[in-house]
Image (cartoon, rainbow, N blue to C red; front, top):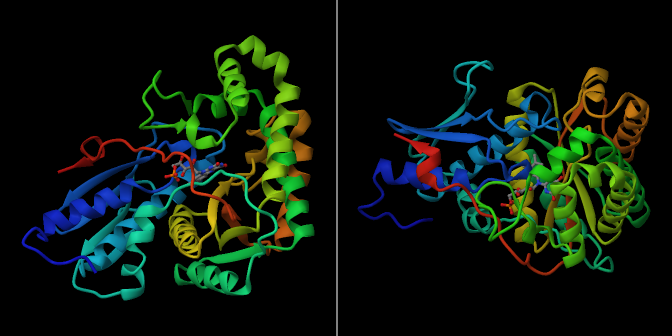
Length: 359
Ligand SMILES: Cc1cc2nc3c(=O)[nH]c(=O)nc-3n(C[C@H](O)[C@H](O)[C@H](O)COP(=O)(O)O)c2cc1C
């Protein structure tokens, strides 16, 4: 519990909740949120200025917002000021995704996650495959997902991880063979010292070798090189993803039934609780996004890859779902790769709170 002092006014608690929300993870670190402090509540709004194809119908953004709301709840709980949360209080068409009210509710289990919530980060380092995933961790992650009305489907056997690695590698290959997806992926990268790193992926967090980072930079700068190198880039990405899975201890799929914005907001909370709990247990965590993560039908698939690859995308997606043991109604919220790995070399930054929080 955070010690109550004279600074624990409503305004100070709401500001602390906003700071916590602003630390949430988001695809490409685009931070697709704005925050508003109202009388006794923090509002989390969807910011639609960063449109990317993978984020079909803003579903990935809602997952990020769900994580931000969860962070705000943890902070409120740690101050002993937890109140009710309204998801989409103005309906799904509104940009207001959630409202977290202050009250005097207690949730010691949530409050106990505060330090781990602040410590959380993406860790893209390779793991030690000799470290086996244990049943205690699996049970804790399942309980974490269920506490937020989600489900954690876990693959932790070597053969299963290899099969998922092959499918996720195939998916990354298709991502690189889609000219617009590759362009979007490269446009998320940021080189420190040359450009601001408060938004986007600071290349130092990608744990690439020097030559891979230089190759990425060349690819981003030159569309001609990109066109020529596309098949080679696709092969390399496939290999890297396979290797990452082969050096992991588990792959965790967070799912929920339904694909409305509310489901992804709730799914984001489940994802974040699983992530923070996994780190508390000592695991390094990296999200993995298969191309069709947020696609729910054939027209979504068609918007992702060129026509000649849509069949391969549908097959890969179906095979991955089968490997993860998902029921037809279950929608993927995110996949998390868990590994026994050292600390990440660099932590990613955020926009300053002043730019994000109003009132
Ligand atoms: C919906 C979503 C999708 C993501 N997809 C990926 C991914 O495919 N690969 C990856 O390495 N990180 C992925 N991330 C992690 C983000 O890049 C990361 O959260 C962001 O850069 C901020 O860094 P941090 O998590 O260390 O705070 C994803 C995160 C979210 C919320």
